[in-house]
Length: 457
Image (cartoon, rainbow, N blue to C red; front, side, top):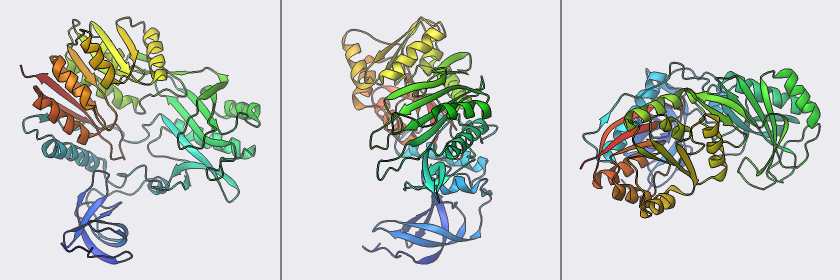
């Protein structure tokens, strides 16, 4: 390859796509030079326009499709494609599952060097649409009208959206209604450039098992004009509402929620179930957005843990205690560790709500708390980790290897960091027995994986 790109910005060229990137863009090559193009699929022939030409790779956009893949489907809602949240919606669901399963297999082989581990077929959904139980959308103004929706990719331009194909219909309806009410009452939307205005975001949370709905209005100002009328209209138009909350965020930041929250009407929380476990969900609680697949994920984690009732279990990165409370049903005792105090407060409340007494929750970073806990002479029979996308910290992996629990269950939202960490654990004396991919987020590129590890000794 030469030192300069074989294409230039604004070139129109005919290509054949060979592959998909991990974020769902098609890959075409010109003299070995890769060009990444959204909304394209392997095997397709198309005309593209180069929008950026770096030294080693470029980006393009689709101009004309000459030959479509058998997996291509019509985009259900055009606005969903514009805001980029549903990167795979132009692919049949069977094609999406194949893409995600292959992604897991490739990184386990390339990064994890795992040749013997069994990778099971991915578990998808019967209905891959309308699964999300929560939306938080930015509010703005266009043509004098209040709009709310999602940002265009790599911009802060809001695409006004009334229907997201991945949101539960109750969530779509709630956002639409609250947007209409605020527009009718002349509520001033927030302007992030000038740090003026009032309404920053609208959030809706829906508990599928109970039908309860929470509305959260996030504002820059401490006061909310016409708040009594807003509450009155919400209750009139959305009868399932059990909680209306005002959150105040007066900081110039991209963080959505502020530190101060007050209830305008109803309860502080709504209630939902995952399996038989009941959860209280506040405006600021972290709660899985796809409870149906969360149950699938946690059932698999429980199966891999194979608890008999005699084990001491550590749940690192425990959040509000979702997996801890599942584990506690089968374990002798469970220790949940989480660095966010609000999450631990929620976890303790959920344990009390479910009358679970064999679980203890502690505030701390897993990578510092668990090594210290181990140094104090404690140990565990089973460790369950569910880290953020960056994976487990090296200090935590080192402690797990030293502690040598008989079994480990690793729940991951990033196959690449999972593969990296599994390699470290394998080199430290563990064997990766099985991996189960689960499609928690259809229409997107994200895939969850549960891994079962056993101590070789």
